[in-house]
Image (cartoon, rainbow, N blue to C red):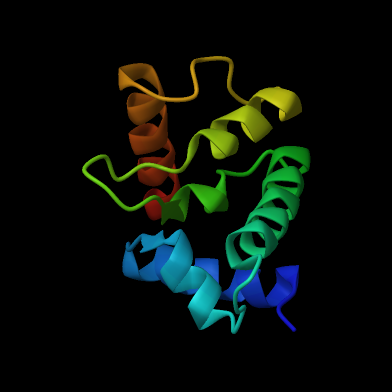
Amino acid sequence: MADTNTLSHMLEGLRLRRETIQYKALAEALGLSPPGQIQQITALLEAIQEDDALLNRPQRAALVIQRGKEPVPRPGFFQKLKSLGVYQGPDKGPEAEMWHQHELERLFEV
């Protein structure tokens, strides 16, 4: 069973390698299986987001991106950030993309 400690270690490895990962690939790497695979990874990522916000750290969940032409997290990532008071922009579009890129830069420079 995957937990936030396991996820935290995986995200740290990605950060050190300056890499991102898609939700599905991360869920599979954590050994999560359907049904509910994405919901499980979302719950774990939201717990990481809460920890990072509480400790005023860069958002490690920014390393997890959606499949498609825009390599950014899903809208729920930004919605969670809003609820935590970390981000106040839209859930998608240029402002969200710019915020995400800045957050990746913060993660990779630490």
